[in-house]
Length: 299
Image 1 (cartoon, rainbow, N blue to C red):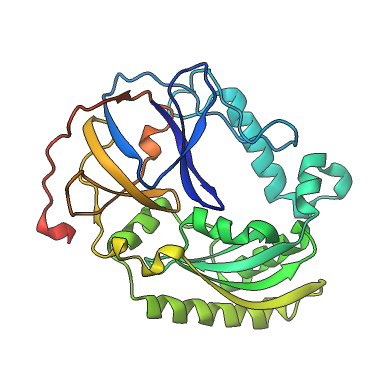
Image 2: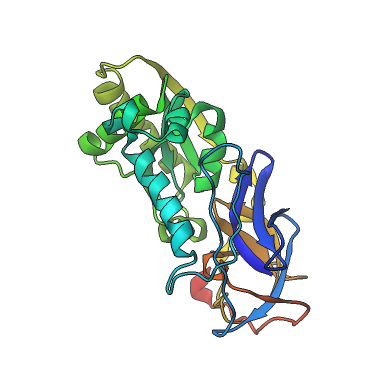
């Protein structure tokens, strides 16, 4: 079994995986998936592939090459991903004639500016095409969010995003470490909501209202669908290294790209980051699980 990532669709999170080198990857729902495997430092590795940004080439390109040392992808896939990311991130600073047609088409859509709050208290500013804004927040693992503006295209919204970062000091990213810490030891929802609302008011007054751009001011809020799910009460960190040994886990849900799971017949809910497994061939089967010792300090 080769796991290539956690992917969000409108109906929820899925695992991208394949069982043979020459077969296409498939998307398997996270909820209900039985993750049974063993692995060690000698496991074979294959590039996890990349998402194409030109239409007509499918939604994912699987790869059979070996990854670069210390990476999960090969040189070819890395170049594609880096080129797209660089062009998209700096697109609003360039003229249309300088942009790849695929980037230009992506930008020529209504976009939304939002502030997202995470369970550790972190707040970030971000943008998304209007049609997938809710999914974008789910795949990032946000807990609460406020949409503060909508623009006619992606260039204008990125100008606003940069202004929020420059003038208010709001980051454009939150690390997986902080997201994971927030799931284990979250701040009170009321505290996060108040801080998010306060930051949104400042951003609206200082940046959105003062912008010399055609836009629509928004005051829409968003809440993670798991916010009322008791599954997240008392989550603990998975205490084993997932890239070594034997594991048997029933997956329950995902917060962004972090997985929630329990051992078969067990009551404890664990959070784990599957990233160390990406691109690593796992022996799948009923191998049991290495012993788990949960210390009081984890609660």
